[in-house]
Length: 536
Image (cartoon, rainbow, N blue to C red; front, side):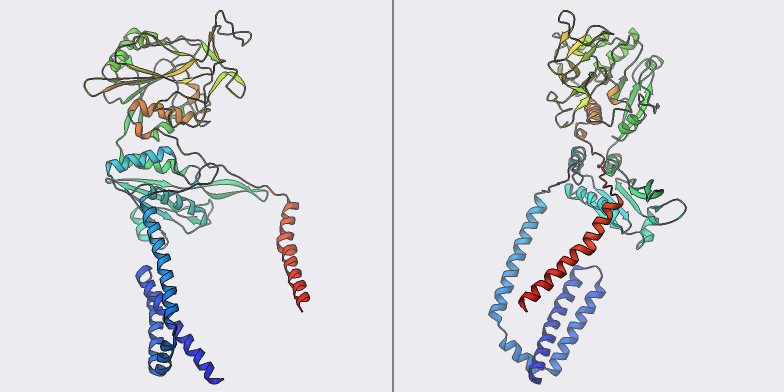
């Protein structure tokens, strides 16, 4: 009996010695903390010494009687499986494929970001991302998002840093923690983006007030649309800014107005596309500024003078990029400029009872678009409150390509009366749909420049109230990027994740508590006792 115990003890020592040696060597080769690896390796070497000096004959006997053929066979199986995994990972590193099963694609980069990363890859610019984060589960989703950026582009280098462990590095990049008011927990959550000597910082945390247990308390939360902020920061460090001028002096859209009809929110979203925004009053300069990449005329209420039309016409002839937003019911008439380019507008409005926003016929809802760079990736509907028709003339200049972009349904019409008593189609005076409400014009010039002009029969779709609804933001930014010649940035922007909360009454909470803590464990115990009793 004593001999059997010794044999078992020796076998345990041999097996544990081999395990310590294997894990210790693996730890030293793979892990960052070599101390643990050296400790395990040391224990393995102690085991080797113990067996060599005190149980050498037993070890020889064990190795002689060991079933080496079975052992070799099992090791072969393990090596084959590891080889398959290595090959699969090599293929996966070359062929990128992932599946996102969330309803809003929370873990999938938007088309806009993917296009941006493709453009960066062509330019061969190297980007370094440093994510300073605290070790809390709330921030782990941001790390997953950054890893998606890295997986999509070999130009991106990602480093995850815990500032509590590396405070000197956080101090070097001037990264600070964010905490709740009146003291309390402070967390780190900042992404530093570096490229070409430029630096951008994106904070991923904010604090907000939430109702907890009947009391309103401050809480640290993640920002809603972190992907948009990160992509905008990448744009700023990798590309030079282009400049947009908004024409002023005729009652155009107000970029500083934060009311529903204003454009303050829209201005911020345009600036996020790496644009510098300024205003210009054409009569005071006598020309379009030389550093203008896009000129936007946003729904003027008063007419432009003949001299201003001459300035705009000359700007287009020289390869200008112009976006015109119009409105019905106003006196501003742009036909003196647009007729030359094969486009005609009016101050009438479009009615569409078949496809409208919340059953309001004067707000057409566009769900299908003509094929064009602006709309080829647009997956969402857009709506246009009180839109005027934009017509393509049969006669147009040579070499000009004009495409209708958005049209209303076949049951729509152009209402001839400005204030009709009843929204009803009149065959004698109203024009039957489909009605074009947006066109895009392009002409190549001999000096490697091109003329780009977009005319949209509405501006309210881009107001503070409407810009974030449906596909309105993508529609506007795609149009601006196309006019500016930044086609690589045309795409679908990331959406704010939906917040799904389960509201439980006290009765439901008690039901879950009693079911999970008492009833289900009691059933398991009862089943075990019953089976034991039957088998007894």
